[in-house]
Length: 274
Image 1 (cartoon, one colour):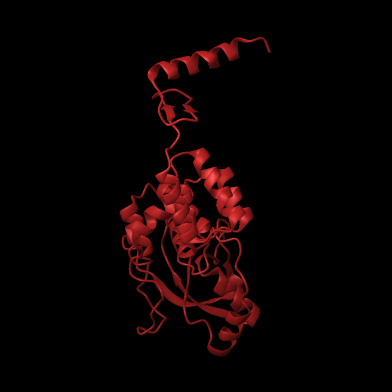
Image 2 (cartoon, helix red, strand yellow; image 1 turned 90 degrees about the vertical axis):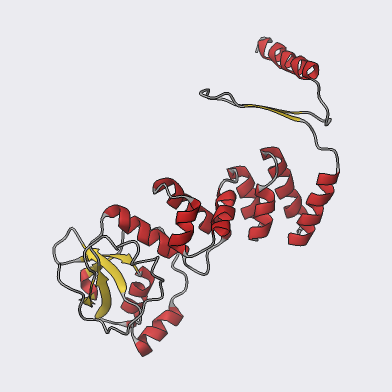
């Protein structure tokens, strides 16, 4: 692959080194050049679904052109290129009537394409806490990255990454309550996610939704709850088995004999003819 050419040496991309250069440091040297719009095609696995309003970007491109190159790689169809990063700029440039745009051609595989596209999506300013959390969870699970590695790649603190992944672990029914009630504050979602069990998460999310609590209201509520005697919860999660058991008592002190009697009552109930 030939050396980088075509783009001014003074041109800087908005992404820090950890974004593009770090991801492609082991690949061939990127090539910068102008590419015809009709030779570009979107990434079919683009993680971003909603590209938002692009009218302002269209107006800016009409006046100043595309200031930040698109990242592309050769397509399976000869002479064409798939967009790795910059589809929103591509759409705006097409609407602005441009016939070619500045691109950086990269020699990357499918895994790296998915990673770059996902990281670019995570660097958007308008992400909701759930969108950010889900994106980071994909990085963690699909690419097997630690919290520290993700933090380096997206340019955020490890604490931020850990908090987002905590939100990603919220059960779907709890998440549904939050979405329906418009609970979008990361602080509120974290307080819900840090409840001791599923039932407590549901109850706390419902209370926030019903009372329209803000961050401080929720914190005060948690302090009040923590000051009260908490119900006793027995958890049984045997390794290698496909079930786990959780029994929540109405009182906060339960003896082994109480627990055995409760389990026997459950067994007796299950043995009754249906």
